[in-house]
Amino acid sequence: MGTPDQTSGESVADRDAAIQAHNAALHAARHADVAVRELSGIAGLRAVSDLFAAVWGRTPEGVPAPSELLRSLQHSGGCVTAAVDHSNRLVGAAALAVAAPAGTTYSLIAAVAPGLGDRGIGYAVKQHQRWWALDHGYHTMAWTFDPLVARNARFNLVKLGAEAGGYEQAFYGRGSDEINGSDETDRLVATWRLDARRTVAASTGPPAEPERPPEPAAPLASGPDGQPILYQDETGRWCRVPHDILAVRRSEPDVASDWRLAIREIFMQAFADGFTATHVTRSGWYRLTRAGDR
Image (cartoon, rainbow, N blue to C red):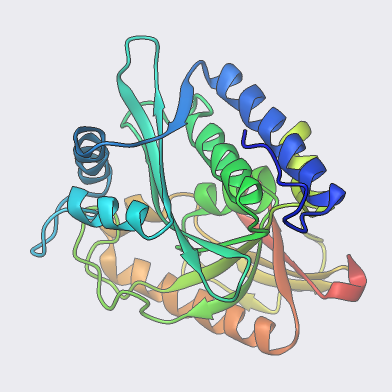
């Protein structure tokens, strides 16, 4: 980790946050049995580009992140992070850009090699990104994610401790890759406050498991599968997404589109009403709360 400059105006709290993040990143890498580092050199960036293509697929426009683009990202102050195993095989990677407003970074893309999704590699990569950002004076990271992919949503909001308070309709237009299919690509906007208490807590131990929604309560809406999709109680609102939307997209694309429209309506109304998505249960229920109720 870089040594803080005593004359730079960096506070003790900033240094402490970076040290905590560095220790958390090292622990996560050990747990995943990988080495995580910032890349330099075009050969490594080409390998990262190939990994992104293996995970996200290719579109008529080409690979998701060409190596030339990743090199330019580095040159402009961003970071490309790679995780390698003991045989020096690339098993995970992510690209991070400097963003506005000041003190913010933006996570452009991240991936773990196919078949290795349960080893904690993605978590180790994100913790390394967190440390890098804090060590360079950034305190917030933002990115977008598909609200219908429950497992990814749980990783972002529970495992990392991010929150989501914005919704973008058709963010990338219509999908044209192997994961998104051909439907509109709606996205939730995640905000990860890198030195917040919930982020620190998530980096140091198992995440707190949110309670299940109040099953006996009358649902406010039902989903395309005919089951309850929205509840509200004294703690906030609860919104359910499918267990495996990727399978639904492959087998029943029209039903997947119905899910997207239903979830779009629920989230946009919730955000307009002042709610933020803060948790996702293992069964795919988002918990949405107002700031004063957390």
